[in-house]
Amino acid sequence: MKKNITKIEPKNCHFLNKKCVVAYARVSDGKEAMLHSLSAQVSYYSDYIQNHKNWEYTGVYIDKAYTGTKGERPEFQKLIQDCRKGKIDMIICKSITRFARNTVDMLLITRELKNLSVDVYFEQEKIHSLSEDGELMLTILASYAQEESRVVSENCKWKLRKKFKSGIPNNFKIYGYELKNGRLEITTKEAKIIKIIFKNYLEGLGKNAIMKKLNKLKIKPKISDFWNESTIDKILRNEKYVGDMLFQKTYVNNHLEKKKIKNSGELPMYLVKNSHEAIIDREIFDKVQNEIRRRAEIYKPKNKLKSESKYLFTSKIKCEICGKNYRRKINGVGTKYEKAVWICSSFNLKGKFECSSKQVPEEILKSKIAEILNLSEFNEEKFKEKFKEINLIEISKAGSLNFIFQNGTIMRKVWSYKSRSESWTPEMKEKARQKSLERSNQNACNNGS
Image (cartoon, rainbow, N blue to C red):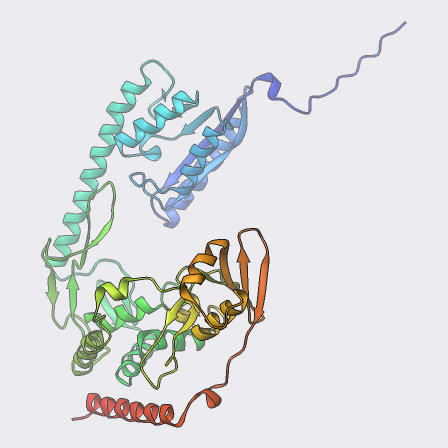
């Protein structure tokens, strides 16, 4: 009888004891040339791994615009986690400097991987971390790489400080200007927005209100899609808008951590007067600085300990729309928030553009809690005792208060509050009118003779 033999190809090749091999690639900035180099590395290692019959290609981990001295590289962290899960047998990297420039971190990582039986092969140095002399060579070469990083960092600092002493700016972006041939030149369209920001602030608008106004008008800042309060604050304080330039406001602490630190007198600063064309008149700029100081004095907490204490519902109320916590808000008499209200932190900082949630008066919260506890009126002590059983109070899109208990049950309470015309007494309206007059008089003083 003639035998008929058919070859059945395997569906799973893991039993052949193939090594699960990956590559790690990194570039320290996002420039086009660097990214092209990164693309070439990825293509090379994909082919390199797949051309080894006893290796199984598992992928390439890529970090773009991260330095080797910093530990927050997301793909590198993912790579280490996958090694801990037993998914990887071998890592290929172009060189030690691509893997890490910090000797201590290098040794800690390679030793951990060694204990996990994960080999790291550094192609340029031709070193396997699992080899007998691997750790000795890695220690020597990583120390060299770390020292090289320090020297490069010091050279960069020296070049920057030499520029500062000569009044030459470093490459940076600032709203209202473009850096051309080492000088700041006004961008007309952006300069108009800068003038509006300064004008609005002197007219009485706060930084948060200006931010919300620009976002509502869909005017974008230089390097992001939305304005935030800190950006407005920096613009109002920035001496560059009057034609001056102060260098070395911040500095980098060291070549390993690379943390940017505010210069509070540790290093010299260099002020260049009239270095470029101004957008804001010096008189207006000085008025804004005085107004910033005046408002800071008015709104400065009189009792620091009291301002730092937590309120009754702090961290207990969550917004269903954006997931952020609610915060307590109260202003002076005659203002929008005369009585205490709880408001979503996203809405409070960025307005409806960020979150369309509703504010909840504190008296409503207390009355609804009293209903749940079957009390004639809110009792703080009984609330604290009962809240141990409640995980969270959630403000829903539909305007209900959802009390979520630890056992998983949810108790909903619908609420509503009076309109502004119904809730304001004649006395409140008169106080608001007086406050508006005072604000108008103050603005007239700021803009007057």
